[in-house]
Image: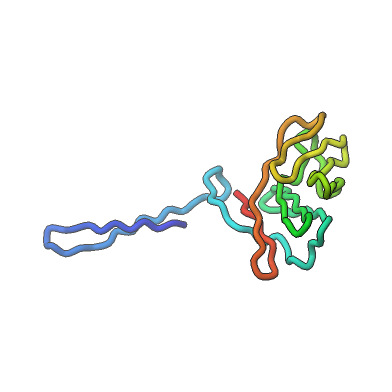
Length: 136
């Protein structure tokens, strides 16, 4: 919810503050972005893939050389959970376990058919002992 305040002058020279509250429906396409706690830092080691569900969306979390990556967790070619795929730490890619399409973790770009559409990527941060992804 966001609050907008506007000062309104009346005839009697007094001022009042009018508040306009905006409630955002998180089930519509108008939902605002927010940092979602994915896991604790200790539960994701270098070279790990992890699946995470948030509001009917599967998110893939990967850790390579202490950098955290987050992308859509379902292959864009066919429904396959990428957290059960294969991580290539050297190339920073994930391979779909179903038809072996390869996706770059930094930008989601497919590297070979049959996938043609990129994965959506998400910003990540480590704060305290938590790993967070910025999910829309």
